[in-house]
Image (tube, rainbow, N blue to C red; front, side, top):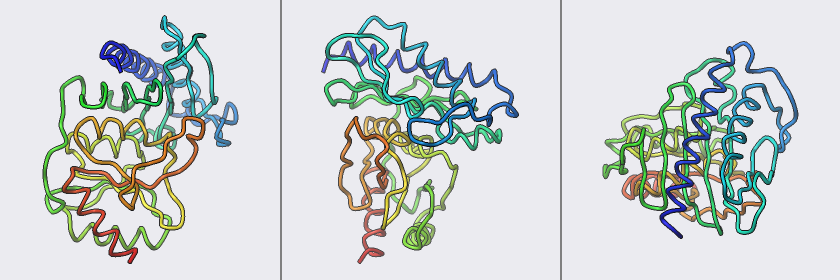
Length: 274
């Protein structure tokens, strides 16, 4: 894995996310919810999704290397022909609902792979223009400044979390409330998870005992950032995700934090499973 490729991929994703930010900023909140198509995932594509996606595709099309995009909205597109392409996974707008309501947490999330290895990732909040990013496996940034996942205990941490669709998840979150400084729900998984990278969130929990609650499209870029910052991300059993680039609509559970917080969260979850 070449350092040069990581640098190029990181710069490319930053430019693409900034382009999405500008495009979405030109849409009035009242215009964003209009349905314009059906997405590759079967969900409606809204005007805000399409504006962000097109801006990303236009930015990526300007590169001079083989490049393929797998977008949550339009599926797989080859932008630049050639062997051994860089593969960019694109969630144009994570939390379209927040974007259409004008709530200030919704993101463009991008991650670039070559030969199955993540080269770079970007999660940009399109409302606040703040950016988490990763270059390679060990360099993470917030607004361009290096960050590390702080070493702290669960008792000193605020935990973000994802959808609650089962009694199991509700019970775990009750335990987390008692063991932590509290919990927060922002309804934007990519941003909520990425915030673990610099300790704004001490950890993240997205659970479902019967079925997973997050598609890889929603959380993969953020997971790359958290891991590059020294954090730990796994499923609710402590196992790594099985990532297949041809099945990014598959779903996962998410537990993340520093090594200490991650371990404490898994212990709480294990007691409920047992």
